[in-house]
Image 1 (cartoon, rainbow over the protein chains, first blue to last red):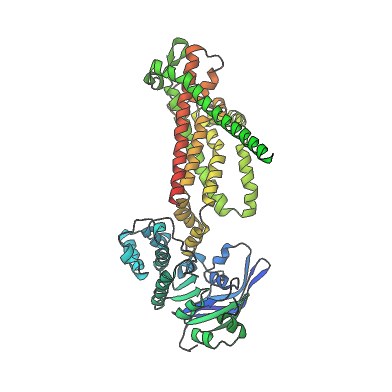
Image 2: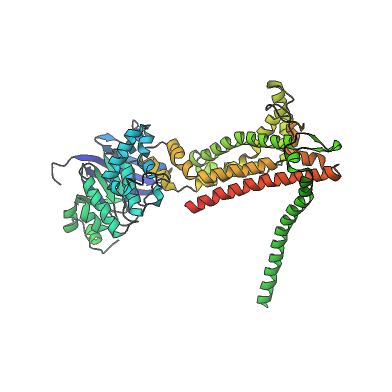
Length: 255
Length: 285
């Protein structure tokens, strides 16, 4: 890792328990500003759980217990002075399955604005257009703003979820296997979009697909059974991993 | 041998199933056969739009009862629909799962309380309160609407709860992940997604309210007149049939059957509306 990189999210000695199950074991990892970091590992290794800690979506599960700190720009997001709703506006999330709301395209994109109480139509229209352009949807959807979002093809739905997120101007974008419901062509479109978004946003992506991690990420972390085994520049991790377990996984002998 | 017993069971079940459908059809036919000739004889207008109900002297206008039924049902919806939908939202979104396991069966028990008990509470508690604080006879349109509003709560709550629970968790997650509060997630996304199920619950509850008889007889006062305010005593279509069927003969008796025909049409319209709303939902998703 080069010294010029600036840490955006700093996870420090973080533990998470689901009831009696120890799902994240003493994780420490720094996510670098305006880079793409991929979390890879076999199913159940805790990579999605770690992702969901970064915007505190795990708070929704009643049996979850956490220890340790996660700093966003130096401020502990598990601190008592944090408003979770504000946190989630800064750290947005794109889910595994596209989940646009059963509303029109426009109402989906402007959802975050309406949550924030913004309703001036001219401003809403401007943000809707800007967000759809940023997600490369404007040309396809500019004349379909009032149509139901659920009738769009899946990859447009997923990019609509990205647009909906960009509308609230987050700083960090979390992506939980964003392409697993998509075909290869749609996947490559999302990947190009992510590379484009990297100029402005810090992106953390969880993926099952090692080629995808190798293609798009700057840094990669390999997780196994709740441990972060290895974390490095993607190229280094994929070409000369230090840990034999990482070696086994990326060469396909495990997982 | 096995094939034989299989066939017998199937045929017996077929006969039983058809006999229950036949029973329903026969009831409908019977009411129509007794009631329709009467309506045709004195004319739908004289029957439906005349306010003079005086069977002893040959006047059979049920307009006051139609008005009373409509007002009492609307009043009940005004009480029951917001309470019921609010209750369903609360149960789904804000009550922890273990508590839900106690509360839901309790609510369903509420549906099992006989309507005469609701009527009894209305007569003993509600009507005196209305008389003391708001005036009038106490037994009134207002008392009927309040009691009916409470009686339809289980219908509204249980169907609305199911509709809200059927909304995919991903909508809720998506809304919360965009920084919405729980309440914003509920009213901006979840209620919109569950809209048709909630609407159906309200329409079905209306059907129950229109058809309810015993509790209404006990608390609404049963005066045959067009109400001028919520404190007036009223008689609904159902109450009219129940109160007079015991001694009615001849044309009077036919007039009551004709009242039944009107009720039947009311409820059929409401049920098909509910069916339409639910089917639309299925088609969309």
